[in-house]
Image 1 (cartoon, rainbow, N blue to C red):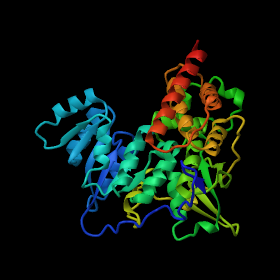
Image 2: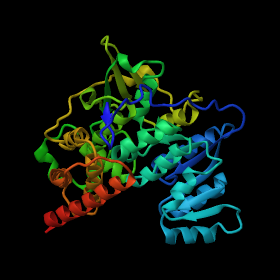
Image 3: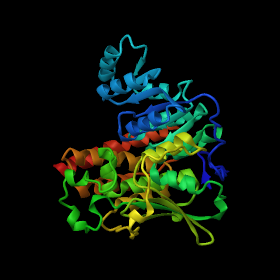
Image 4: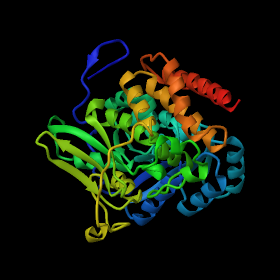
Length: 411
């Protein structure tokens, strides 16, 4: 159980997912937020493969107006949105006469999330900018296919509150999607723990002293997944897994002591659920994000044919290892922030965003990422999260402190 902002105890719902839509009749309208990123482009592949069931009604991007223009002309949504205003002006000029409306600024994310023809909102925005459209989509009673883990990390209590009013969440992250589908038909009282698997990233097996001099290029060379730059670095530090732990806490209502992480280098078992009788359920597939995206868009159905078929004899072996928590301290920082609660996860996430950006731009060494985050968390006194402003103020404070810490290390 968790405490709300006025101290009253409330029960978290045993099943946080509301009754799914039946999908009968006309095509399901899909709004994709972050359509030019890795998840967004793969989501469009899924939509195209199931054009008899799905149609694109809205697309948004940050500043890649050329790719968004191509997507708009190919899928003919009713609207497109560009967060970066100069890019939006260029896109509007290029789409003149097409009948496609162009929205601009951060408000375009909300406009797409609230589009009346969108039954499903796939939130693939990078960073905590995804929280407002997450809340908007749920508030409008829509299905939220959630690929923006920062929504749950920074504003998990707000998301659960919005979820109680309507809408539904289907997680798109391969790990949470796997847990979600392992729990179909199960009662949470029979669940002992959730086990999130991690590939170990490009530096699996390296000792801490060997990480001091790793380069950006090395950090971006993920062994099994093709992802954006920020999430790839998060995978290298294991912060990505830490954020997923916090997300799992809110999605499935389990205490942190019952959310575990193991290294699984093959990235075939995407997560496991352990039951009180000692048995496990697991979801297996080759690493291809189009599967969890398809599952989120098709639920409660399953649509074939598969994008990638898993042939069991070809897998050869599946192995597991303990996490080296001394070498990859970001995982424990995430557990610490999650246990502290309130604004601490939002501070963790914001500090991480600043530190990763500094590393990518050569302003911070690899191990400096965790050092900056640890320093900011040490200075923070967590407060309850009562509304969106509490999250935004905590993030603003954390970014300022993290930027100061980066400057001190660079100096």
